[in-house]
Image (cartoon, rainbow, N blue to C red; front, side, top):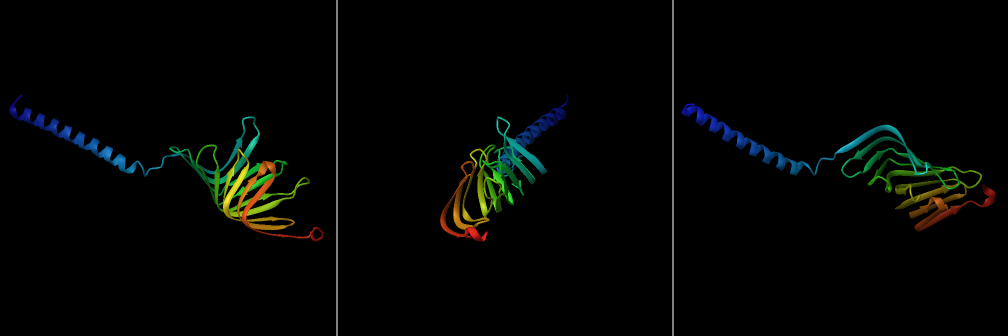
Length: 190
């Protein structure tokens, strides 16, 4: 091999090493910057229904929604136009609707956001009601509803307005936390 060939070979090796180091540095630097901004989506569902059951096969809730986005890194889900259906303790269907819902962990609380409505139809065992608020937390495991927002609870006998609510559906208990204003119709006027 002549002198020019050896110099060309050494120059090519040095340039290749330099470009490899530069590329490695760029990829690691680029990874540091964009790693925090990228949300990796596990799966995306559109116009779907989901049935969540307990270990014994009993229904926890039935969910129908427009879209669901599940984040792989956090295990959280974002649901658009959700409609939850669950059985109340007296076997009456309970329907919960909202503009949007978030669940931070697989079996955690479900935060309902925007124009939230809870509807329970009446049956021979209990009277129905409709609850309206702007945000609500639903826990299907403990059968609880909670909010710190203003609420309006309407039934066939009247209405109740207030701020904040805690409800244990399995005990058929609703507690309104503050600023309670109620108006009920007399029994003969229903």
